[in-house]
Image (cartoon, rainbow, N blue to C red; front, side, top):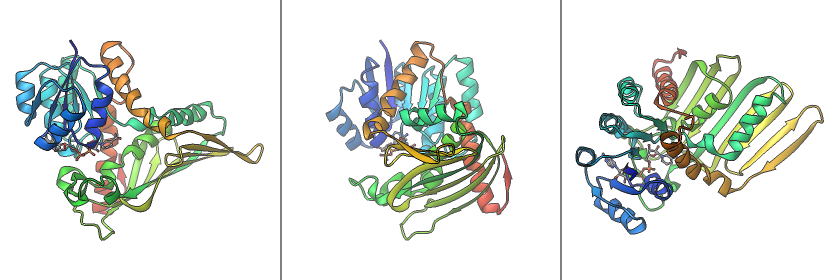
Length: 330
Ligand SMILES: NC(=O)c1ccc[n+]([C@@H]2O[C@H](COP(=O)([O-])OP(=O)(O)OC[C@H]3O[C@@H](n4cnc5c(N)ncnc54)[C@H](O)[C@@H]3O)[C@@H](O)[C@H]2O)c1
């Protein structure tokens, strides 16, 4: 029997249950809110439920633990789960900062465990397509990228007041920079690793947040290009896009329109590749299967804790650059 424990049955937790239930024999859940547990139980076939992850991990044996609670509790749950010999699926961002994760990596190595950090945007078919085009060097050398990642926080969860959502709370790991770090992961995945960063992380709106609502990052990448990233929780109309300017053309990845726009300097023309919302949402079942296959079918695995830690290091450096008003070497 393949048993999975999922900790945190909020919005993304329930989405993951819907995909994991096709792969694992039994799913147990934990949430500190009985209402959230009841909601999940009414939707899915759940074996056991717990209000405290310690009770679950100390009393049952799990093949895998999915950590889908807010970032401030990712580290203690991951550490205990790894000590209990469970493979780890950890929602992004990895945690609050880089501290403590080396120990979890060691436990995973000693116990021969798979770890996966859910930077799911890599699994969108049209992200893979951009990667393929870049790797083919069809448009020449990559010169720079502009990442735009913004939407209006109060629109995210219409069923709750945004002020009670963890995203509004700095101490629980909310905020534009931590949450929208998909954009950092995608720059690393598509273009390369940064060597230094300058950033401004701010709270600019009238929203009632202790977390940041705006972050501007300027990174110089190891292989030469520059990347400019603009995250926010304030754009009244969502914008999620990456423009990659190359010596012989431009690639625009648009995750709101589900489209790739390609400009080829040779013909002086734009060509669009259209995708759908279903293509976008397919990243979740693809990701669940990827995690499952890396545990049970020896599939080469992407974005383990060591990889997620590289993105976390950039997040930490961005906060430091902003508070110290300095360029920070990565
Ligand atoms: N990859 C993606 O596409 C994606 C999308 C949304 C959220 N996320 C990530 O998933 C995580 C959760 O986000 P969400 O939007 O689902 O938040 P949410 O507030 O909807 O759900 C979080 C749940 O965790 C529960 N919780 C809090 N502390 C807990 C604890 N100690 N033990 C057990 N449960 C606890 C809360 O009661 C809540 O039900 C965050 O890290 C977020 O960045 C990822």
